[in-house]
Amino acid sequence: MASHSKSSQKTLHVGCPNIGDRQRFFDLVSGVFDRRWLSNDGRLVKELETQIARRLGVRNCIAVSSGTAGLDIAARALNMRGEVILPSFTFIGTAHALAWQHIKPVFCDIDPATHNLDPAKVEALITGRTNGIIGVHLWGRACAPDALAAVARRHGLPLLFDAAHAIDCTHGGRYIGSFGDAEVFSFHATKVFNTAEGGAITTNNDALAERLRQMRNFGFEGYDHVVELGTNGKMSELSAALGLANLESLDRFIAVNRRNYQQYRQELDGIPGVELVPYDDAERNNYQYVMVLIDAKATGGLDRDGVMSSLHACDILARRYFWPGCHRMEPYASLYPEAGVGLRLTERIAARIMALPNGETVDEQDIKRICSLIRSLVENRITS
Ligand SMILES: Cc1ncc(COP(=O)(O)O)c(C=O)c1O
Image (cartoon, rainbow, N blue to C red):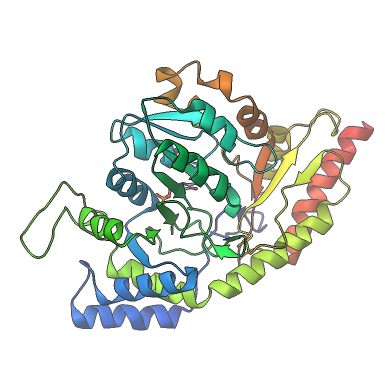
């Protein structure tokens, strides 16, 4: 995806896939073909689950076919129904996982400092119809796990985390993966660690893990005994092979991301109205998301969309993550036209933020090109 355009300028994408050792992947796939075992709890899926659980220090890891399938299954296994509180400032899949099973998503506003759910606002939204809370660790920054756990406990609600962005990230020194009742990772191609399509649910609750495993496989217990409604959310051996190869390179991917992020920080420093979203140096993060806020009041009127279209014209495909917020997308915009009233901070951040390219295909020269373009756009605007 780090392609070259007709002008031979490198096109830079947000979420261009990281790919580990190809030979290792081919060898693993060759073993899959030799065994003629392509799916259904194969050896590589089990190995990937074991390695991820060990890495994150969590008792159970259940690999699934996508992050969204993981959210579907986890919400159902936690008996979420009726209404569930979640942020609107997230990828649409978080909300769709609920609506797909006729659960009403109740959108809650964010804390502008963290871009994550504001626990006090969550608590204020709880009613007799509320049956759960989903926090999202946006950009891999932990979504107030302790405060949300306290709210969930006070009201007897299940707490699920969408950890799609948060592999290898910590909160209080503890890896994301064992907070709440369960957490769901995405291993989509755009994530720092990918299995092309895929994801995982992690939990320290063994009984819940057992249920999640059954639900992922049509509700089967054993060969021909179906104990409840399930779906097909299984990961294939080919995805697991890519996952095992990529996992061996994950430390390198993160080191590259971190170095790139630090360069972005230096090169964007001092540009009026351009603010890089920070990471807490005391925690681990995977630095996959280089998020920038544009304040048009300080750039001479140049707003996020203006910066973005100039970047796109130069083959730098920045992305408006997550604009305009789930509540302004269908079916939610039609179903809940008033939802935006309580989402003032979500709307403010969603209108100003964008993601810049990162990952192993992005190098020092690319970051210089991106940042000097942003600098000259703003400086020209201010002086014109
Ligand atoms: C915050 C968030 N939640 C859920 C998902 C859905 O994951 P998947 O694409 O693996 O279904 C994504 C990304 O794709 C995401 O960014």
